[in-house]
Amino acid sequence: MSAPAPLVTLGADPRVSIVVPLLNEAESLPELAKGIAAALEGRETYELIFVDDGSTDDSWKVMLDLVRADPRVRAVRLRKNFGKAMGLSAGFSKVRGDIVVMMDADLQDDPAELPKFIEKVDAGFDVVVGWKVKRLDPSNRLILTRIFNATVRWVTGVKLHDMNCGFKAYRREVVKTIPIYGDLFRFIPVFAAWEGFRVTEVGVQHHPRKHGASRYGLERIMRGFFDLISITFLTKYSKRPMHLFGLIGLCMAFAGIAIDGYLSTLWLMGHKIGDRPLLSFGTMLIVLGLQFFSMGFIGEYLTYMNQKRIKASDLPIREEIGVKSERAEERASSSALVD
Image (cartoon, rainbow, N blue to C red; front, top):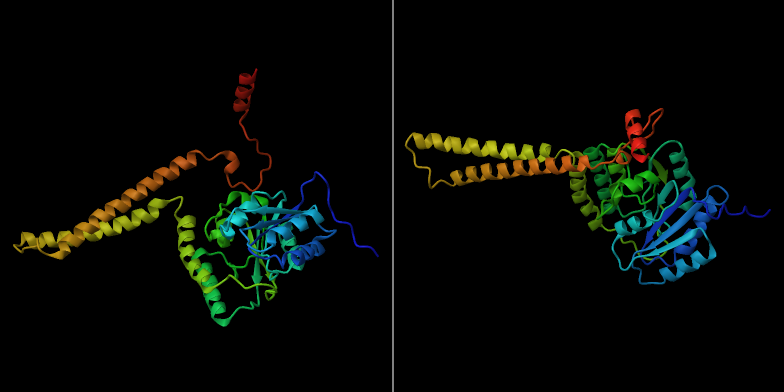
C-alpha cells in the first residue's frame, strides 16, 4: 500500500505553520523534517519554517537541501546570532497558517505530538503550551525549574506547569498581537492570557538530545526570575502606571513628611535639628516621592495618548454577531463624501 500523497495546494496558504529557530543543529534537521512530515502527512496542509540564528556549522546548507526536496519547507537566515526571540520574530513574520507552532530543533520535542496541539486549538483554545511531565534534566536544574514555574503561577495567576517548554501552538492572531523581545518569548502565554486569549496545556514527552550539547543552563533559569519582574509590571501596570509609581511616591512622600514633621516639632521645642542625618533623609524621601508621583502622571499621559491612537481593528474582540462597524448616519456621510 503506497503512502498518502502530501497535502500541497499550489497558491493556497497552509493551515499550520511550524516555526523552528535553530543554532548549529545541522545533524538534527533532516530527522526533524522527516518526523514532522510523518506526523502531518495526509492530515494537514502545513509549512515548515527553519530560522538559522547565525549557525557556524552546516545548518544552512542542510536547510537549503530540505527546501529543494520539499516545497513545504522554507528557510530564513539571520545575519548573526541574535538569540531565540529574534529567531521566533523572524519566523512569525513569515507564517501563513492560521495555527502557528513553535518547537525546538534538537529533537527533544516529538513531532508525533503535533496533532495533539492542533486538536486543542481546534477545540477553541488560542494558546497551547507543552508540559514535559517527566523532564530528563539534572536534579539541580529540575528543582530550580519547578520553583520557577511555581513562582510564575503564583505571581501571574496563569496555571501552567512548564512555562519553559519550547513546544507551543498559537492561533495566528496571538503571534501577530504580542511583541517578542529579549527572553520574554517564554512568557507569551502570560501576555496572551492578559490579552484575553484562552490558554491551556498538553502533556508531552521529553526526549534526550541526540546531537550536540544543550545551551539551556542555570543562568537562563535565573534570568527568568528577573524577566518575571518585567512581565509583572507589563501585565499589571503598563495601562495604569499611576497605580504603581503613584503608590510608591505617596508612601515615600508621607514617610518623609512624617519624619520632617517630627523633627520640626523638636525644633519648635528648642532642640537643634540642623545637624541630624534624619532631616536629610526625610527631605530626600519627600523629593523622591514627588519624583515617583510625577513619573506616574507622565506614564498615565503617555498611556492615554496611546489609547487614543488605537484603531477598532486593534481592539481585543473575539467575535461579532449582528454588529455593524459604522452607524447609519456615518455610512451615509461617507457615501455623500464619495458622491
